[in-house]
Length: 221
Image (tube, rainbow, N blue to C red; front, side, top):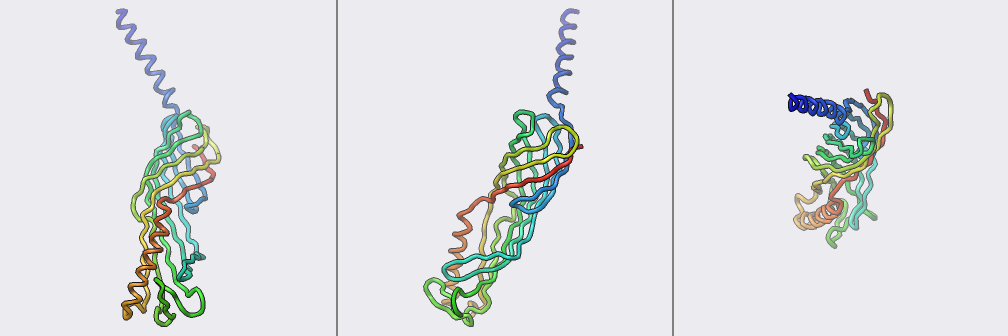
């Protein structure tokens, strides 16, 4: 009987301790702005120390301007990012560490212009605008699932409005495609244009990651 009572007491203590450790049970919806654009998120904090967050953000910028030694490029930058993360609150408070996956769709569409006068210089060779024709390019920074790491600050367990902030990074997988209508009938131009494409590829490969910085407001139920 004494053994039975001890077992019952232990079970009671475990029963009391589990809800205390898993006190949080809150849903939050938020809206924010940052380096990935404007977006929203929904978060379920199912434990004092753990939450699941899903979100989307994106924007389009029609004023891109980039310069190389051979040409000026103008165009449009478009980004859409979908994410799912597990947030860990080490102190059961507002500060959290975040790990998960994002599905970025980041692309730039550009049109090339001569740097001076009416001529281009690719790989040390000079070509007129008529020889090059229309110079266009596409740069894709991400179109596949990538890992994400970050940290941030989020509202408490209490219902109501609150602010949140987050910084982090995810990997990018850049691919550059540069083309000119004149290259179809000009083999030398095609080879020299490939050199320009390789240089642009090297430029975007230097980054390797996309920085995330977001601030916003959320409501906890």
